[in-house]
Image (tube, rainbow, N blue to C red; front, top):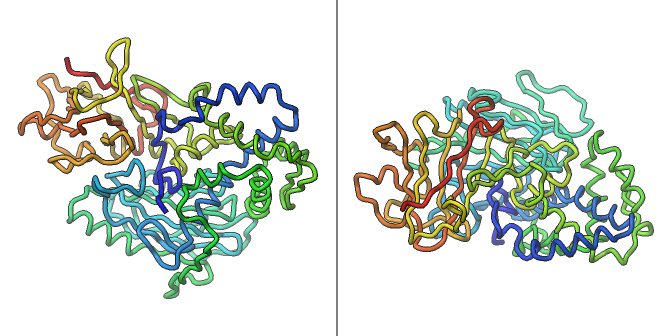
Length: 480
């Protein structure tokens, strides 16, 4: 399968771009006007589709990511730790918006029958974060340097309604659903020496069901289901379902992935169209004439939230980002939008991913192009305020790395950035070599169009902070 960031979701909101909306945006106004004229049952079906979108997408992602017999580069059977061993280079085309800051260690497992136990070694003060997502895409707990430190630790992930006793020294994290996705990230500088250090840490991590904890248990090979489409992207597969197929799967998933107490008003309404937790989808309560139209209008409505979000999406100095990820409460449309364009997003306290497609050139903002020169200037003392790390990554127009003479795909404090006489720091964003004396501050661009993404891991939560707005990203300006 050709995994995209939407399907594997290697971390956060990368697609703040027109391509996220595609042709959907062009049709959206007409579709939404159709919705305003629709019946109450039709409108409810659209709401139900939005409510269900994260759970259905997570299940389809899980099926594809685990439908292999043995560990592969980005996939592994249920219960296996999938270890990313190096950063991709400019020839890599499997995952859009790849990252050159952390190596991933992830796993899918089912806590419906029994808990699973994860052991993390002493990270020796290295930055790492291990968010765990439930079936609704909520990050229900986040062990890691920010929250639990970097000492060796062992914790058990328990399922809904589990009652029992855990071994001494094992911390409990309660998953609201049976589906659990561990999406761990360990910081790495990308040198051969640091790769070796991180590989050692990855290999010391252990994952096992509680019944096998403390033994030499090894995860068994997986069973491949040939009926699963391994080539079509997850979002396309979900969007191709008609409403009957979609709600039938949703109802099945509700049996082991219950909604929260806060969802009670929505759950009560769902019964009107045949969706009751714990039961099969009652198709007799659903108008079959809605089967094709509901998914079209519902998805268009989800994507329109990108543009008309009432504050859920920020657009500051040409940078688009959100601080409302990971925990959504009853903001179902924001949850669905993040699922569609950035499945696997962290809580904002752990990571924020501002993305920019156009330079701030006064009244008119124009798409970045390597034929021009740009600069991003941090005034003295105003570099990104983070406790983890920050970086600025260069992508071509399709969100892939750019081949360049420095083999540099991102720029950050890892480089020996040179400051100006006034203490400010200029990041030089251009295709033309600025000269050896300026290589430390150069982020090489392609000759054509490109996109910039900033990663802010463990951003400050108070002044100065991007979360509360007391720190803002400077604009990228065209050099005259």
